[in-house]
Amino acid sequence: MNKVLSIGGSDTSGGGGIEADIRTFEKYNIFNLVAIENIVTMAPQTWAVTQYTEPNDLFAAQLQTTLAVDLNGIKVGMISDVDNFNTLVGYLESVNPSVLLVDPVMATKLSIDNDRMVNLETYKAKLLAKADIITPNILEAAMLTGVESINNVSEMKVAAEKLSSYGIKYVVIKSGSRFGDNLATDVLYDGTTFEIFQRESIATDYNHGAGCTFSAAVLANTVKGLPIHEAVLDAKNFTFQSIENAVRVNQFVGHVWQGENGHGATK
Ligand SMILES: Nc1ncnc2c1ncn2[C@@H]1O[C@H](COP(=O)(O)OP(=O)(O)O)[C@@H](O)[C@H]1O
Ligand SMILES: Cc1ncc(COP(=O)(O)O)c(C=O)c1O
Image 1 (cartoon, helix red, strand yellow):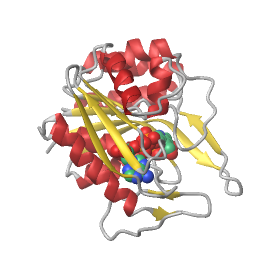
Image 2 (cartoon, protein in one colour):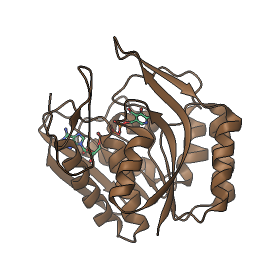
Image 3 (cartoon, rainbow, N blue to C red):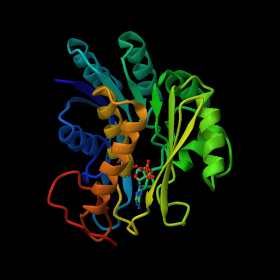
Image 4 (cartoon, rainbow, N blue to C red):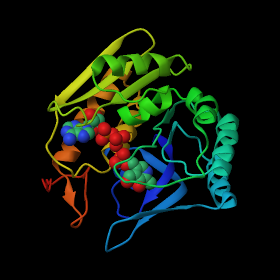
C-alpha cells in the first residue's frame, strides 16, 4: 500500500490542514503518517484564531519516527516557525522523497498572525525549490513572486513561469472563487506548457479545507502514477465535490467534506 507523510498544521475545527489531508488520503486508499508542526485553535465566542507551534524537539521526533517507514511521497502544508522550518529542511535533505508536494500555506481562509515564520527568500530557496509540485493560491503566488496581486489568467501564467524558474517541476496556481467571474480556475505549468482547468465557482463561504484537500488529492494521484494532467483534473473534481458536500460547523464556518452522503450546506 502507498504511504505518504503529511507535514503541517492541525486545525482543531477539523476543516483544513492535517485533518483534511487524512480524510482525503483515506478516500484515495493511501495510508498517511503525520508530523504536526502547529495546532490552530479558535475562540468559541469570536472564532479568533490562535496558532500554537509545536516545540522543536517534538516536531523533530515526529519526523524521526518516519525514518522507519518507506514513504512514497511527502506533503508539506503550513509551517509556522523558523526552527521547525530548518529541521524540516534538514529532514527533507536526508530522506530525499520520491515526490515532494509543497502547499505554501501562507494566505488561508483563516487570519493567522505569525511573526515566527521564515522569510520568503529562505522559504523559496530552501523548501520551495526542492518541491516537485507546488500548489499556491493566487494570494500566495503573488507573495512568492513579489507582485501586488494576481487578477486574471494571464497574470496566473506569468506567476507560474516565475515559480517554475526556481526549478519546480509542476506549478499549480489556484484562483478559487477570488476573481468574481463565476469560475474557479487552476493553472498548471510544467516548464513548457500551460493547462487551464476551469469549473463553475460554487457560491459558498463553506470551502475551508479546499486547498488542503486539493493538494492532498494531487499528491495521492501522483503517487499512484497518474500523469500530472490527470492528477490535477481528478483532484479538482474531487475538491469540487467536497465543496458541494460542505458541512456547516457553526455560525462562523463551514468545512469541505470528503466523504459520501453530501451535506450540501452553503452560506
Ligand atoms: N467556491 C469554489 N467553487 C469551486 N471550486 C473552488 C471554490 N473554491 C475553491 N475551489 C477550488 O478548490 C481548489 C482549492 O482552491 P482554493 O480554495 O483557492 O485553495 P486555498 O485553500 O489554498 O486557498 C482549487 O481547485 C479551486 O479552484
Ligand atoms: C493548520 C491549517 N493548515 C492549512 C489550512 C488551509 O486551509 P485551506 O485548505 O482552507 O486553505 C488551514 C486552514 O484552516 C489550517 O488551519
